[in-house]
Amino acid sequence: MAAEGGKIDPMHQFTVEPLFGHWAVGGYDLSFTNSALWMVITLACLWVFMLGGMKRDLVPGRWQAAVEGVTGFINGMMATNVGPEGKRFVPLVFTLFMFILLSNILGLLPIGITGAHPFTSTSHFTVTGVLALLAFGTVLVVGFARHGFHFFSLFVPSGTPALMIPLMFVIELMSFLVRPFSLALRLFVAMTAGHILLKVLAGFVINAGNAGIGYGILVGGPSFILMVGISALELLVCVIQAYVFALLTSLYLNDAVNLH
Image (cartoon, rainbow, N blue to C red; front, side, top):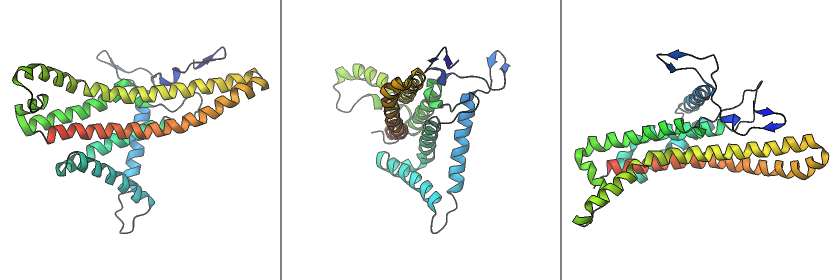
């Protein structure tokens, strides 16, 4: 239970629960969960966002201008970090950026129906890990497709003395292999920490209000004001984390495309 005996569990919001019973196939649990539901909702919102902005009117409306603004932003990022060839990767980076952004924002919606609540898919390492592996896998495919085994020269900085090449190769290789982990961990930690803090502050407000008017004023009031400020900060973090994920993906793609 999220609340039992007056206590509020800040981790309950991250519990993955099946919505229509357990479905097991070949020993694997394929149940449709609340996490899967909110990922589907995120994709539906993204589809509606794109559908409403692809009218291509000569004088764009607000919706079309919003879509063109986001696509132009991603296109400019890829052109700056990758160069002319970065345009072919705009759909990938745009999808990653928008999916993460919408998932983050939808998880902050202040709604709830009979115990159900918005679920932040990006607060789970499995989801952010898959997104990171998608980006990392694309880098590997592009790198080896364009450069073959010469792609391994990425792990030997130019001008490295011959005696240092084996050591530098191992260090650079480990640094490269840890990229998807750090990419996924950064997003996962930011979303989890922010939501836990908001739930703790909300617990202060609720418990202080139940304890009486004195506690409500002295504890609940400041906690509520702080919660409003943290909510605004968390909304900013949602945008920043989506941007950082897209930015780092573009930089990794630059290593694969423009290998020297």
